[in-house]
Length: 379
Image 1 (tube, rainbow, N blue to C red):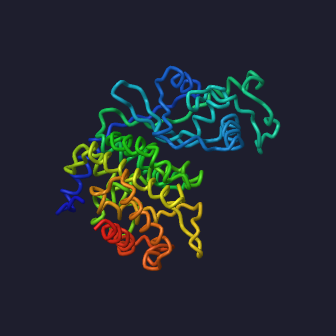
Image 2 (image 1 turned 90 degrees about the horizontal axis):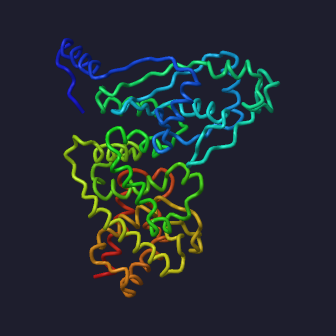
């Protein structure tokens, strides 16, 4: 964190310097212009950069109704790339609703069927209408509707572009923490983010995280688990109490081109892949499969319930012996698998799990529990 300015004049100068690093422009675009820009790929809506399209069809329809009634709508935010193409960084729901109504919205490379208006509560007569059967006068009115666009020009400092997006998308709870990280971090560099996304698709990791709920997966919690692995493995000594901030800080540090931190992508990939190959082998050895990351009942039966505390304890604890482990050695695998089977119901481990156990000491305790016992099993 930068030191505070030592005098009022220095503080004013510091603020003024940042202001000069920002180049902005405000333009009123018609929705027809935005649709044309989208069609010609002059306006980019990237689902990895933006939140997924989540408005219900009723919410989309009410937005179309608002435009027809000339109700005020919030501005959208764009960044200008070096090639003069605009990327949408805030306003996906509004722009996507219009494109959906026009039948021009693409998701995963395919166009969605045109939106049929429903749940319009001010003009219920609109319900059941599509863009194709809207009266011509209303169709013209709709495409000529304007929205203010705040554009961050390409000449702006990339770090300020990053912080602007981060602040735009952390005010509410619509995005998960990992979705915000995925969206914002690419304004610094997308290399580490893409690396995490790629590793989240590793077959052994997917096997070990199979018990995640669909909602957790939709909110990119599987990708957060990959980030947790590297953050706690490589920088766990700096963790204090807020996991979300800790993970964000680590991801920013690795992604920032001006950072002095080193991250050996090839070496870290090797460790990650070997770790989850071993963990998968443990699950198969004790015949619990993907439930290797789950909790157990009072009788010791594994549940189909992912536990982040078990995940942290096992995957980080096994780092103490990962260099010595051979996943093809049945003797070694049986020894470490026995540790996991016992540990899941051991009170010494369970005391470091459960609600409110995100503190630093509990994290260390659950990692140390498995680290010490894995080490003892191979000695």
